Length: 155
Ligand code: ADP
Image: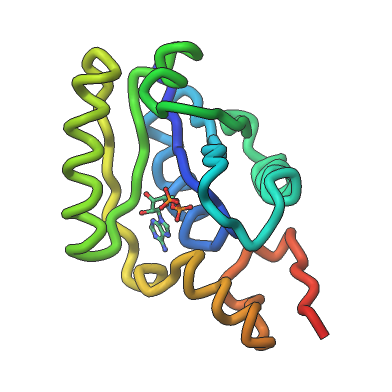
């Protein structure tokens, strides 16, 4: 069975993430969208909230699971029997960063292959970082987030 892990912070999930998963569906038997737990990283949204949004958004896809993991992504993949990682590339800085991580994961994960999909032009400007800025700034983030989730803006 071809299992891919799509790791990320998803703080919050955007329509860019959803598009990537949808496009990768024909490539794998199962995709696990996995929230990395990094205790030193500061998030805007709590872990459980991010997980709940992922469950809501991907409920309609029988081949997509939602999970969380601590420590190394490569070890998590080995533990659940996933031979592939899924990541998106929006621009050259994504590439520079992802290249190193993918090479490391290949070594640490005993041959795990990272499959990259280039972001579609209509989504390549969307990042969780930008969405967080919009939310913190009090503007409407709904054009960038899946319609299943509702982010209440702070007054
Ligand atoms: P991380 O904290 O690991 O960067 P993110 O949640 O920001 O996690 O992103 C997870 C993955 O989703 C990354 O591979 C990123 O390149 C990809 N991604 C994010 N936004 C988009 C987008 N708009 N189009 C395609 N891929 C995207």
